[in-house]
Image (cartoon, rainbow, N blue to C red):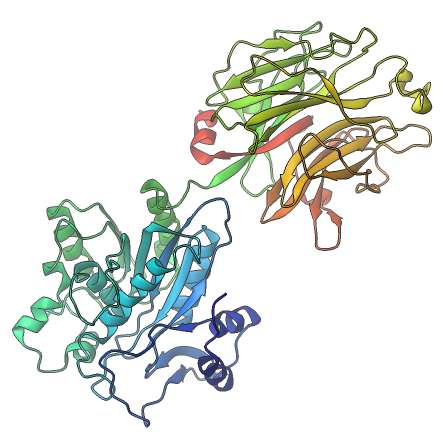
Length: 599
């Protein structure tokens, strides 16, 4: 747990009010140094906010105690990329809200952990050598992240830096002067960023192109030619400079666009991977974008980070379903938010059913397996003793369809409905499960309703889809049960299921839990759906909470439930599915896979 810098907390809290989120994040800021290098003690020099006419903070001045403010991404499945954020302000103030906190929150939204660096602003009043003060802080920030990759779940090979305006100069300096020994580092940890992002940056200290305010703040009014050349970072680029992303506006009246252009040309000359976006307008200091084309740059940066494999490709949601009786086969719809679903291929079938007594493809369930393949099972008939199976690398080209006679050993089997697959990561095997009625079984719940069907959930396991374990009973809840769907949950497994009881009428969805995929599962919960009849549940986590989709089959439309802190909220009125969508399965896929499906 990060230690709170209490002195910083109370100082900021006293001077200016914040939103609850901003207040919480600033309180988590921690000191960058045990002992600030090259510091001159000056009691009269105290940090202060810059306020606008309404009393709102627009920046911080006179920084004496550098800090890092963490914005961590919670992702236990993989290590996260991370960035150090250097706000701008002409080396005389830090625009820590617009070019720090807001930017960190945006990085979190794309899965990147972010650390806002409150670096010292060059001053002879508190520094023995003000030209190296900001660079000392930037180098140490990179090293702090690398020292704590395990603690903060960071990818040691994906530690980057981003800077705005003068903060862009600092980020470029950190990217070209990372070997400069500007303080006595306590270890050999590298200070080189793995990638850098420079947003309307000051790059050069040369007259005619530099931002004079930044130059004078950092180097003084009488800087030598050697010092000016040293901190003109376009001159310091070499083949080891990290890959770089640049943003600038043509009409920038404060920092000429040539700063970015010249740096880009130096990167190109040294064969350093680089991308630059020059916008027609936007002026200077537009942050994450204000008006015009410059508002697109965060999305462009996200694409660049994805293309360079710094962040994972953002997934989209895919829904596999059938229409009518399932005779035409497999249908797909997609969504980027889990609410609005759009059919693919003009709602035509992607795969025609070929196996089973009736050659149907109802209730298609698809998962991504541990072998990287997509595995699908489906209902082939109303009265068969087996199910359909096929696999695919891309959801377009499928293996030869197979009929799996999973209930052939039971002479009294009337049906094999709504099969699903769940992958067991621990045992590296797949569990296939479905609902069947076996004549004479479970007479205590036998009814003449629903043509005498009296289902229970059965299963088999396989590691290779070539050999299968003997079929066993998976779930006997004491009532007619169908349409089970099992997902890995934080503490084990959660089963969404349908209570099929007709008298007294249920026809609703419930949940059960187990520590193991193969059970035993707990007693079914009270209904989580309303008085409408529901079937075919399928679930996925969106923003850390379960979203359960289901077929409101008597109403001929789809419904949805969203998990809350206290239970389940019906959000059926907020979703839209293609007309005629029937019992299907939701899964995440990379956007590149969706792109191919769209073709």
